[in-house]
Image (cartoon, rainbow, N blue to C red; front, side, top):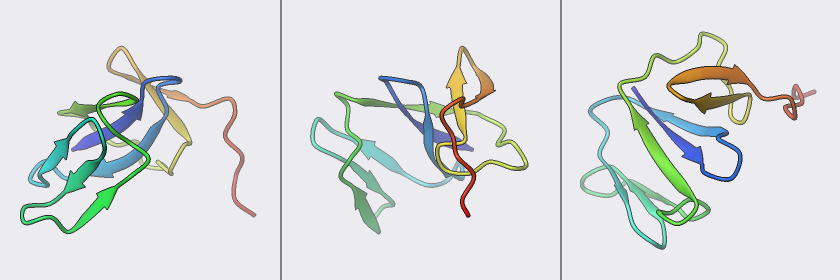
Length: 81
């Protein structure tokens, strides 16, 4: 598995299987080959991609931070209603 992490606060925003191709540029992250969709809010200036991760069972967008190869609950996360 792999995850996109925002550099500012280490929040994990997306999870992908190992075989999903992610291409990060200074403008965006393209998903798939051929490209299936583009993530516009993330790019090489504000994000990074962590690989060889194990997704927490209850992972949700923004619920976790990925710091020093460890999952940490995001104190700012609010459960959806």
